[in-house]
Length: 76
Image (tube, helix red, strand yellow):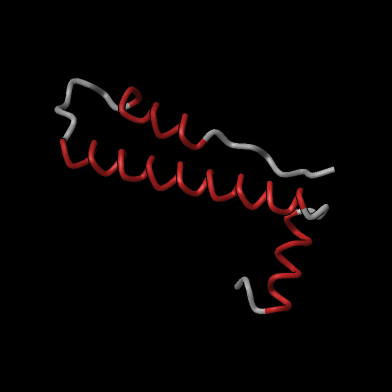
């Protein structure tokens, strides 16, 4: 059984503006940067789901698939 903790990174990023004290002006660049971070994290989550699906279709765990790819030069 995996001991990995699932974290809702997108949810955390969406809460950030609400946790900032709104008495200060929320800088537009910060907002743009948070949106960019959220998009990158969403893409990483989607890629991770694709890897999990690929590993599952091969009957392997993601750890085992990563190790196999590393042996043949397909992963860092």
